[in-house]
Length: 170
Image (cartoon, rainbow, N blue to C red):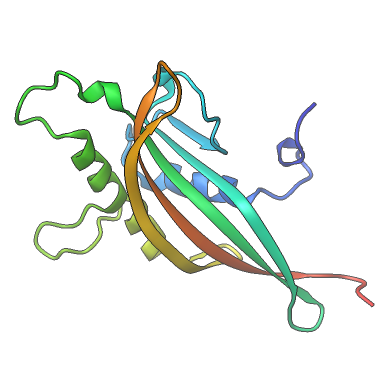
């Protein structure tokens, strides 16, 4: 049975909207997989991957006839740690690759590159009817996901807000 977001008559989820934004704006070939939700255990052939999930959504009464919806989003950039083993000296390390993918900056101006995760987020503060309210820290680290798969990752959490009309509210 398909989940609700896979049915034609449902609005795209916020992770789906963000995945579309990243697919268009990230450098070609940066990621093999774009996915809503973290599958936790997956084949190394899917890496590098970008996972986006929405662990929390909050609703509050907004202006007359509207709800204020707050979407808490987790973006994960996931690379296979084993690709770094045996790499010759002088080759970019996985830590450098992740740094540049997440928040690489122009060498002269220091401005975030538009083909990075943070560059895309910082230049697209409004995405359709969504507004980015807050972008959290970029956290990086090594994560053992299974006996066969060890990953090096970067995570960033962001908060988006949306006003949604509520017809027939009494």
